[in-house]
Length: 289
Image (tube, rainbow, N blue to C red; front, side, top):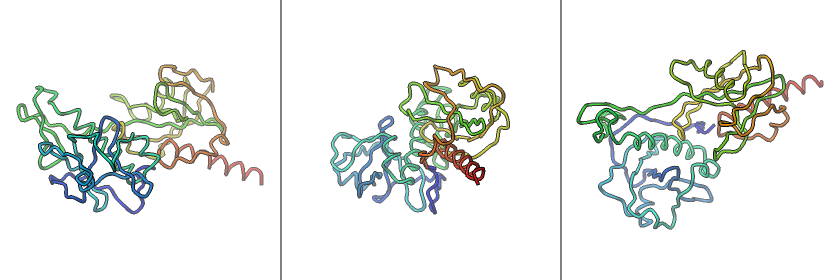
């Protein structure tokens, strides 16, 4: 999955520091990120790349230290004075970076976007409306007027693989950029356990009841500020689908063989589909012997 970056590790402890020429600079325009191509692959620019490429950096705009992956440091830069004058760098979508960059760069970009959204959404205090300022000792924004302290938020959400023997319930989102088949998903609401979220979301989106809910694995998903919790569950009762057309454009039972070309090592959804395929394939092979 995107966070699986081999022998490398994300170190997200906050440090109050300024970027060096060799540090990575992460710059966003809404859901686009500033990137460059190196040896045919997408990568992120270093501070020296932006300066060499003629970028006019706003000296009054403070960069924010984000994290490091091993010894490589990443900073969020909020303001380019001439974002359209570039030769070696370009704006690309987060979807593009998913398909054209190494996992380490994808993970860095998605995690940085999580923090970018948090910084953007909390420029003003929610209690008194005054400007917030970054903390110096920890990753926190605080209000100098009323003392309100704001920390990064992480939203729990579930991904559910609903199975019925050798079939799995696949869905497709309505009105979303992502149009491949996925699994039932949704956010945990106030006062709910993750298992209760599984039951509710499956029922709300597909009209199906489930049993034998089993936790599988989690995944940080910075694009939406989520921590995704993956579950397998079995059909309980009728297999008739009553689809929520506001949330979904498609919902159907699919045979395990329909997943044979699934090769998505990026997402929890893709991995869970692949796990189901391998389990059913192995069961089929044993039954044929």
